Image (cartoon, rainbow, N blue to C red; front, side, top):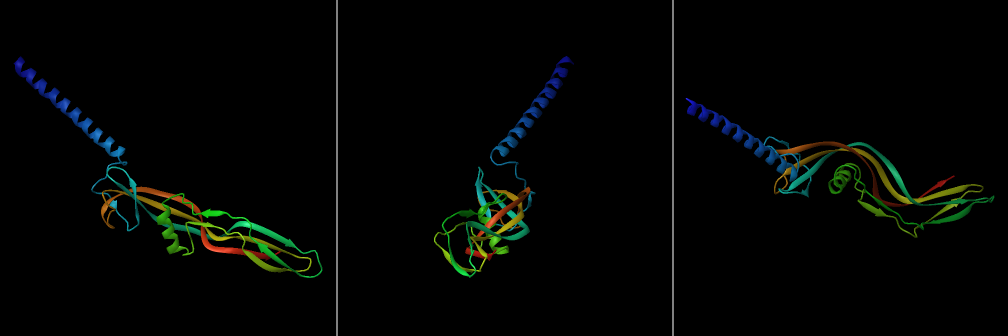
Length: 208
């Protein structure tokens, strides 16, 4: 009887040891998954949207994409140079404004990716929006300054101040996921703002 008792105890001990090893194996697998690219992907992931995907590295490869939503779009003018002509005479005078300072304006993306976001803005705001624009030097404009008046001149590029949301998705695999495939990971929504320069450049003259 004592021998049988020892055998049963041994089986229970072995079972506990196997259970402990199984837990360690699962924990190790999860840690490895996190190390190579976040939480492990599941077969029942969310539906992948039809968007532009960017390879962000990892082993296996990780792809990331965004669904953008516009909130506000406000026209703006990015000034790189400014001049003022004040006419103290009793007769009108002609004044020439010439740009002498150059600045570079770049599309800054606080949420999402530059390439896909630029395409979204071109399709939904204006095709004049560019990734970067450097203003020119030596561009002139002429205006008539009225008697006892003034004309203010600003040189720069037209732009848009934009607020938006970027809904981020990730996929793991050797190639970007097909639209509609249920294999993506929803990484949440982030809000962003940007000043988007355009290629429309020149002087703005106003009477003071």
